[in-house]
Length: 383
Image (cartoon, rainbow, N blue to C red; front, side, top):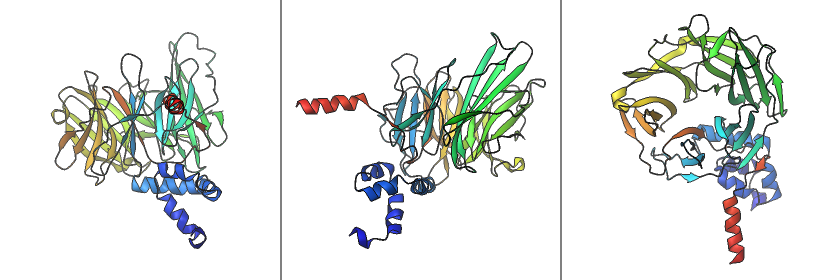
């Protein structure tokens, strides 16, 4: 029947299928293999996944206090806002942790003196190790403090996925930066010579969104002056934004992404205020979307991250971190101002979440080999 089905219709049907099915269909025939691995089809499938939230999966980066650690575990997101029992995903590289994620790809890193980076697609079970790029220390740097930060995002202007690495060097009375960008298209690193402001990074992680990388920065002269820095992955230029409200000394602030918008969260002992930048790059579009009173969430909660909206957009999934170290997932009802804890005994005790969608990106990467599957195949052969 294949000759009687228009090629356009076959493409449209396949683009609506989950990743797991398409991976199986690579073996159907040469024509389907060529179609599914074609870059235009991969983009079409990704666009459909984003619009429909298909294959929405949470990757739990387990973070316990003693090895051995199950770093990655996956949870399927369903329409009724429930989560299935987690199952362990074999990680491609031992003792690597999640840095960032974008379009179904997860950025991993390992090390300090020699920082190694890799990109992983957990649904297609492929990964790629990036070439190691040495950190170039300034001539005045000897035994001072050094910190490296990573972000991973999509450059829509050049249709390229990039890793931004920012290294801070703290000397006795000064501070310097080294900034480099990795391009998946060219498989190479590039040093950025843009003049960076005298502001130290004061957030746990950098955030990539719509071609920009954002982070909170504190002025080294005026200590209480906090701002948002944005680095454009295409132009490789910096831009400075004001926060929606100036934080007080006793408040803890952080950036996140929610519903495709930049999110600014202000936490204190009583409330957590959540703001969205409704128009990308427009400071006047900052809008407070909800306020969470601390007693509504948990008496001993330390901070939370925003993960995603529910299917109907009336609830927000929160990653709650308690002072005792325990991690919970919570649905916050924006209209009713109530929290509903996600009850799932298969969750790790302490974890960080990366949200993934169905994506065929990195099909040409290296295979992730699970040794447990090798053992099972060996047992079946002996039987």
